[in-house]
Length: 302
Image (cartoon, rainbow, N blue to C red; front, side, top):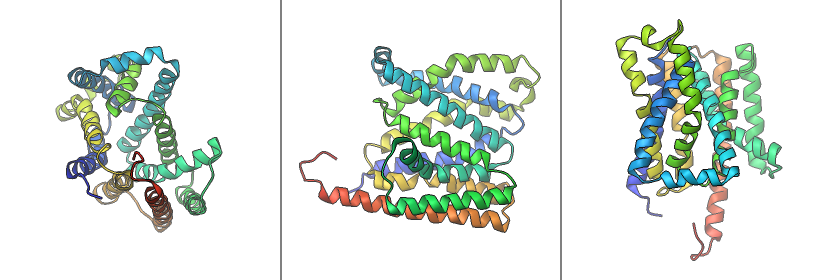
Protein backbone atom coordinates (compact mmCIF):
# COMPACT_ATOMS: atom_id res chain seq x y z
CA UNK A 1 0.00 0.00 0.00
CA UNK A 2 1.26 3.48 -0.90
CA UNK A 3 1.67 5.65 2.18
CA UNK A 4 0.81 9.32 2.07
CA UNK A 5 4.16 10.94 2.88
CA UNK A 6 2.53 14.13 4.12
CA UNK A 7 0.36 12.13 6.51
CA UNK A 8 3.27 10.03 7.77
CA UNK A 9 5.45 13.10 8.42
CA UNK A 10 2.55 14.84 10.16
CA UNK A 11 1.96 11.79 12.37
CA UNK A 12 5.63 11.49 13.29
CA UNK A 13 5.82 15.22 14.04
CA UNK A 14 2.71 15.04 16.24
CA UNK A 15 4.02 12.18 18.36
CA UNK A 16 7.52 13.64 18.64
CA UNK A 17 6.10 16.98 19.78
CA UNK A 18 3.86 15.21 22.30
CA UNK A 19 6.93 13.43 23.64
CA UNK A 20 8.98 16.62 23.83
CA UNK A 21 6.21 18.37 25.77
CA UNK A 22 7.86 16.80 28.81
CA UNK A 23 10.73 19.27 28.40
CA UNK A 24 8.24 22.14 28.19
CA UNK A 25 6.40 21.18 31.39
CA UNK A 26 9.62 20.33 33.24
CA UNK A 27 10.84 23.89 32.62
CA UNK A 28 7.80 25.05 34.61
CA UNK A 29 9.05 23.17 37.68
CA UNK A 30 8.05 24.88 40.93
CA UNK A 31 4.82 26.42 39.64
CA UNK A 32 1.35 25.31 40.69
CA UNK A 33 0.30 22.27 38.62
CA UNK A 34 -3.37 23.22 38.99
CA UNK A 35 -2.60 26.76 37.90
CA UNK A 36 -0.72 25.46 34.87
CA UNK A 37 -3.61 23.22 33.83
CA UNK A 38 -6.00 26.14 34.23
CA UNK A 39 -3.75 28.28 32.04
CA UNK A 40 -3.45 25.46 29.50
CA UNK A 41 -7.22 25.16 29.18
CA UNK A 42 -7.75 28.93 28.93
CA UNK A 43 -5.10 29.50 26.24
CA UNK A 44 -6.10 26.33 24.37
CA UNK A 45 -9.74 27.47 24.35
CA UNK A 46 -8.78 30.82 22.85
CA UNK A 47 -6.62 29.24 20.16
CA UNK A 48 -9.17 26.52 19.37
CA UNK A 49 -11.90 29.14 19.09
CA UNK A 50 -9.80 30.82 16.41
CA UNK A 51 -9.17 27.50 14.63
CA UNK A 52 -12.87 26.59 14.74
CA UNK A 53 -13.74 30.03 13.33
CA UNK A 54 -11.22 29.78 10.48
CA UNK A 55 -12.30 26.22 9.60
CA UNK A 56 -16.01 27.08 10.00
CA UNK A 57 -16.79 24.29 12.47
CA UNK A 58 -19.06 26.19 14.88
CA UNK A 59 -22.19 24.53 13.47
CA UNK A 60 -20.91 21.09 14.53
CA UNK A 61 -20.27 22.37 18.06
CA UNK A 62 -23.67 24.06 18.30
CA UNK A 63 -25.32 20.79 17.24
CA UNK A 64 -24.04 19.13 20.45
CA UNK A 65 -26.74 20.98 22.38
CA UNK A 66 -29.37 19.00 20.48
CA UNK A 67 -27.89 15.61 21.35
CA UNK A 68 -27.73 15.01 25.13
CA UNK A 69 -25.82 11.74 24.78
CA UNK A 70 -23.04 13.41 22.80
CA UNK A 71 -22.98 16.26 25.33
CA UNK A 72 -22.64 13.78 28.21
CA UNK A 73 -19.80 11.97 26.45
CA UNK A 74 -18.01 15.25 25.75
CA UNK A 75 -18.36 16.13 29.44
CA UNK A 76 -16.96 12.76 30.56
CA UNK A 77 -14.08 13.07 28.08
CA UNK A 78 -13.35 16.56 29.41
CA UNK A 79 -13.18 15.30 33.02
CA UNK A 80 -10.88 12.41 32.07
CA UNK A 81 -8.68 14.73 30.03
CA UNK A 82 -8.39 17.11 32.99
CA UNK A 83 -7.42 14.25 35.33
CA UNK A 84 -4.85 13.01 32.80
CA UNK A 85 -3.34 16.43 32.12
CA UNK A 86 -3.17 17.34 35.82
CA UNK A 87 -1.53 14.04 36.79
CA UNK A 88 0.98 14.32 33.95
CA UNK A 89 1.95 17.93 34.71
CA UNK A 90 2.19 17.25 38.45
CA UNK A 91 4.39 14.19 37.85
CA UNK A 92 6.70 15.95 35.38
CA UNK A 93 7.11 19.07 37.51
CA UNK A 94 7.86 16.87 40.56
CA UNK A 95 10.61 14.79 38.86
CA UNK A 96 8.60 11.67 38.02
CA UNK A 97 9.16 11.68 34.26
CA UNK A 98 10.02 7.97 34.04
CA UNK A 99 6.76 7.07 35.76
CA UNK A 100 4.79 9.11 33.20
CA UNK A 101 6.50 7.05 30.50
CA UNK A 102 5.31 3.88 32.24
CA UNK A 103 1.76 5.26 32.32
CA UNK A 104 1.62 5.87 28.58
CA UNK A 105 3.36 2.56 27.83
CA UNK A 106 0.65 0.63 29.68
CA UNK A 107 -2.25 2.77 28.35
CA UNK A 108 -2.99 0.46 25.35
CA UNK A 109 -2.99 -2.55 27.67
CA UNK A 110 -5.30 -0.73 30.08
CA UNK A 111 -7.67 -0.13 27.16
CA UNK A 112 -7.74 -3.87 26.46
CA UNK A 113 -8.38 -4.62 30.13
CA UNK A 114 -11.26 -2.10 30.21
CA UNK A 115 -12.78 -3.71 27.13
CA UNK A 116 -12.61 -7.18 28.67
CA UNK A 117 -13.65 -6.32 32.23
CA UNK A 118 -16.02 -3.43 31.58
CA UNK A 119 -17.61 -4.43 28.30
CA UNK A 120 -17.27 -8.21 28.22
CA UNK A 121 -15.14 -8.24 25.07
CA UNK A 122 -13.47 -11.49 24.13
CA UNK A 123 -9.80 -11.63 25.01
CA UNK A 124 -7.50 -13.08 22.36
CA UNK A 125 -4.84 -15.47 23.73
CA UNK A 126 -1.95 -13.19 22.79
CA UNK A 127 -3.65 -10.20 24.43
CA UNK A 128 -4.15 -12.32 27.55
CA UNK A 129 -0.43 -13.08 27.62
CA UNK A 130 0.38 -9.39 27.18
CA UNK A 131 -1.92 -8.40 30.06
CA UNK A 132 -0.42 -11.08 32.31
CA UNK A 133 3.10 -9.85 31.58
CA UNK A 134 2.00 -6.25 32.21
CA UNK A 135 0.46 -7.28 35.55
CA UNK A 136 3.75 -8.94 36.51
CA UNK A 137 5.54 -5.71 35.58
CA UNK A 138 3.27 -3.69 37.90
CA UNK A 139 4.07 -6.13 40.74
CA UNK A 140 7.82 -5.81 40.12
CA UNK A 141 7.62 -2.01 39.95
CA UNK A 142 5.46 -1.87 43.08
CA UNK A 143 8.10 -3.82 44.99
CA UNK A 144 10.79 -1.51 43.60
CA UNK A 145 8.99 1.75 44.40
CA UNK A 146 7.68 0.46 47.72
CA UNK A 147 4.17 1.47 46.65
CA UNK A 148 1.91 1.19 43.62
CA UNK A 149 3.14 3.33 40.69
CA UNK A 150 0.19 5.66 41.21
CA UNK A 151 1.03 8.28 38.58
CA UNK A 152 1.48 5.59 35.93
CA UNK A 153 -1.77 3.79 36.80
CA UNK A 154 -3.78 7.02 36.83
CA UNK A 155 -2.26 8.14 33.52
CA UNK A 156 -2.83 4.76 31.88
CA UNK A 157 -6.36 4.45 33.28
CA UNK A 158 -7.58 7.95 32.44
CA UNK A 159 -6.04 7.80 28.95
CA UNK A 160 -7.56 4.37 28.33
CA UNK A 161 -11.07 5.49 29.32
CA UNK A 162 -10.61 8.78 27.46
CA UNK A 163 -9.73 6.91 24.26
CA UNK A 164 -12.76 4.64 24.57
CA UNK A 165 -15.16 7.54 25.09
CA UNK A 166 -13.60 9.55 22.27
CA UNK A 167 -14.41 6.73 19.86
CA UNK A 168 -18.11 7.27 20.56
CA UNK A 169 -18.07 11.04 19.96
CA UNK A 170 -19.01 11.75 16.31
CA UNK A 171 -16.81 14.82 15.95
CA UNK A 172 -13.58 15.74 14.16
CA UNK A 173 -10.57 15.73 16.55
CA UNK A 174 -10.41 19.55 16.47
CA UNK A 175 -14.14 19.88 17.19
CA UNK A 176 -13.96 17.30 19.97
CA UNK A 177 -11.04 18.91 21.80
CA UNK A 178 -12.58 22.35 21.33
CA UNK A 179 -15.85 21.15 22.87
CA UNK A 180 -13.97 19.57 25.79
CA UNK A 181 -11.92 22.68 26.54
CA UNK A 182 -15.00 24.94 26.22
CA UNK A 183 -16.78 22.75 28.78
CA UNK A 184 -13.82 23.12 31.12
CA UNK A 185 -13.29 26.84 30.51
CA UNK A 186 -15.47 28.21 33.37
CA UNK A 187 -13.75 25.95 35.94
CA UNK A 188 -10.34 26.80 34.44
CA UNK A 189 -11.00 30.53 34.68
CA UNK A 190 -12.12 30.12 38.30
CA UNK A 191 -8.99 28.07 39.09
CA UNK A 192 -6.67 30.62 37.49
CA UNK A 193 -8.41 33.46 39.32
CA UNK A 194 -8.17 31.66 42.67
CA UNK A 195 -4.50 30.77 42.28
CA UNK A 196 -3.48 34.16 40.93
CA UNK A 197 -4.87 35.83 44.06
CA UNK A 198 -3.04 33.45 46.41
CA UNK A 199 0.53 32.73 47.46
CA UNK A 200 1.12 30.34 44.52
CA UNK A 201 0.30 32.94 41.87
CA UNK A 202 2.17 32.10 38.68
CA UNK A 203 2.57 35.79 37.78
CA UNK A 204 4.66 36.34 40.94
CA UNK A 205 6.46 32.99 41.34
CA UNK A 206 7.45 32.41 37.72
CA UNK A 207 10.57 33.76 36.06
CA UNK A 208 10.32 35.81 32.88
CA UNK A 209 11.14 32.77 30.78
CA UNK A 210 8.52 30.67 32.55
CA UNK A 211 5.85 33.31 32.01
CA UNK A 212 6.63 33.27 28.28
CA UNK A 213 6.27 29.48 28.27
CA UNK A 214 2.93 29.69 30.09
CA UNK A 215 1.61 31.99 27.37
CA UNK A 216 2.51 29.27 24.83
CA UNK A 217 0.43 26.60 26.62
CA UNK A 218 -2.31 26.82 24.01
CA UNK A 219 0.11 26.56 21.10
CA UNK A 220 1.93 23.49 22.45
CA UNK A 221 -1.43 21.84 23.11
CA UNK A 222 -3.13 22.55 19.79
CA UNK A 223 -0.28 22.24 17.24
CA UNK A 224 0.33 18.48 17.78
CA UNK A 225 -3.42 17.91 17.58
CA UNK A 226 -3.61 19.72 14.24
CA UNK A 227 -0.75 17.58 12.93
CA UNK A 228 -2.51 14.44 14.16
CA UNK A 229 -5.72 15.61 12.45
CA UNK A 230 -3.75 15.77 9.19
CA UNK A 231 -2.27 12.29 9.71
CA UNK A 232 -5.31 10.35 10.98
CA UNK A 233 -7.30 10.21 7.68
CA UNK A 234 -4.20 9.62 5.55
CA UNK A 235 -2.24 6.96 7.45
CA UNK A 236 -3.43 3.40 8.23
CA UNK A 237 -3.88 2.73 11.94
CA UNK A 238 -1.49 -0.21 11.55
CA UNK A 239 1.16 2.46 10.97
CA UNK A 240 -0.23 5.23 13.18
CA UNK A 241 -0.86 2.92 16.15
CA UNK A 242 2.74 1.81 16.77
CA UNK A 243 3.88 5.44 16.39
CA UNK A 244 2.11 6.27 19.66
CA UNK A 245 4.90 4.48 21.54
CA UNK A 246 7.23 7.30 20.49
CA UNK A 247 5.71 9.45 23.25
CA UNK A 248 6.56 7.25 26.27
CA UNK A 249 9.86 6.24 24.65
CA UNK A 250 10.88 9.91 24.48
CA UNK A 251 9.65 10.44 28.05
CA UNK A 252 11.64 7.47 29.27
CA UNK A 253 14.82 8.67 27.53
CA UNK A 254 14.38 12.19 28.91
CA UNK A 255 13.78 10.93 32.45
CA UNK A 256 16.83 8.67 32.47
CA UNK A 257 19.39 10.59 30.43
CA UNK A 258 18.38 14.25 30.71
CA UNK A 259 16.88 14.40 34.20
CA UNK A 260 19.00 11.64 35.78
CA UNK A 261 16.10 9.78 37.39
CA UNK A 262 17.10 6.56 39.12
CA UNK A 263 16.76 3.27 37.22
CA UNK A 264 17.72 0.45 39.62
CA UNK A 265 17.82 -3.13 38.34
CA UNK A 266 14.30 -4.00 39.51
CA UNK A 267 12.87 -0.96 37.68
CA UNK A 268 14.72 -1.97 34.51
CA UNK A 269 13.20 -5.46 34.80
CA UNK A 270 9.74 -3.95 35.28
CA UNK A 271 10.05 -1.77 32.19
CA UNK A 272 11.47 -4.71 30.21
CA UNK A 273 8.36 -6.71 31.06
CA UNK A 274 6.16 -3.82 29.89
CA UNK A 275 8.06 -3.63 26.60
CA UNK A 276 7.71 -7.39 26.08
CA UNK A 277 3.97 -7.10 26.74
CA UNK A 278 3.70 -4.26 24.20
CA UNK A 279 5.58 -6.26 21.56
CA UNK A 280 3.23 -9.22 22.04
CA UNK A 281 0.18 -6.95 21.95
CA UNK A 282 1.32 -4.92 18.92
CA UNK A 283 2.33 -7.95 16.83
CA UNK A 284 -1.00 -9.61 17.59
CA UNK A 285 -2.94 -6.44 16.70
CA UNK A 286 -1.05 -6.03 13.42
CA UNK A 287 -1.68 -9.69 12.57
CA UNK A 288 -5.42 -9.39 13.24
CA UNK A 289 -5.71 -6.13 11.27
CA UNK A 290 -3.80 -7.65 8.34
CA UNK A 291 -6.17 -10.62 8.37
CA UNK A 292 -9.21 -8.35 8.30
CA UNK A 293 -7.74 -6.35 5.44
CA UNK A 294 -7.07 -9.50 3.39
CA UNK A 295 -10.69 -10.64 3.83
CA UNK A 296 -12.13 -7.28 2.82
CA UNK A 297 -13.58 -7.17 -0.68
CA UNK A 298 -12.27 -4.49 -3.07
CA UNK A 299 -15.64 -2.71 -2.92
CA UNK A 300 -15.76 -2.66 0.90
CA UNK A 301 -15.09 0.69 2.59
CA UNK A 302 -11.83 0.98 4.53
